[in-house]
Figure 1 (spheres, rainbow, N blue to C red):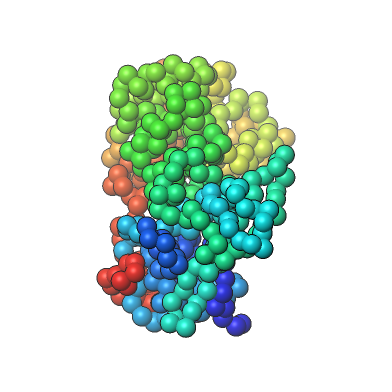
Figure 2 (figure 1 turned 60 degrees about the vertical axis):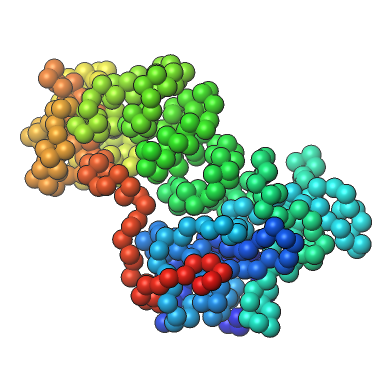
Length: 437
């Protein structure tokens, strides 16, 4: 397939990145360009590439040997494996440039003269020096009555307003950036948001729906969750907390000042705040502090067919779905008397009309709410489980702890930000990010 020397930056997003041996090493997540204070043609510096380990690195454009419709191929030269960190003078096309308001002064497009338009893409082209430059800018007028307007492609010199100061202005749209996030997992969006400048992070989180933002926040370290939550007004912050899993909401509130946390709890719907308050009563490094208060809880007269329908809920994590807990009413935590659990594998082997009350595993030991992290790790190792019941002294089911909750607290607090060097076949180590690379 022939390599291209003229492409549009936004279309590179998501393309597979291949090493010189043809092996996939990651995907393109953004394009880095240089936009100076003095008006000059923007130069492409390189690509932000997300490795298979989820680490994002910078690959200088001169390390790219070919850009094809479905992939980008690297040369055999060294590439720095350090996590991408934006430098002064560097601008992210997808993260910062798209949706910027500019003015067009093109004699061939008189209808755009004197009106604000928004940037929807940048055309980049390889010139004789082998450098890649921004040569064209695709723009669109603001939507009219919800309808999309036509896209116009303009030479870069006919566009005014694409400057560092313009990119720093508040109120920039995020439609193009959110479109890039469509279909991505929350953890992938969380990584992308972490790499954005603070101004763009604020604009993105304000534009996300509450449920989507809650899912993304849960993939960030608690300190970063708290920082972003504090940028929201109290009403919106409470709405987002309501959409989070109770245990994650409790962990996040534990990072805030006690008075601020109480204000947010008071603004939440009582049905959502009550399980969070119960979790906050326990030490964060115990079963009671780590548990989810919303496991799969069934009455003994529930059929196997009904139980399987419950564990098929896509909102359940795989770990939580491995065990169903059977109790006397009420079935909301803290429940009535805990009777035992039923393993998912057992449910799959039984007739659909069978009752779960006759399939109980009564021999599995329970976890006390004050069980320590060390006790939890021994529990999961000893019984080959990924989920376990947390039961109080009166035999009420309080919730369930999963192995991922335990790992989350055993690992360093910044484990989500990978610090371990991946094995990239095109590089050993290297200096150089940015124009000097």
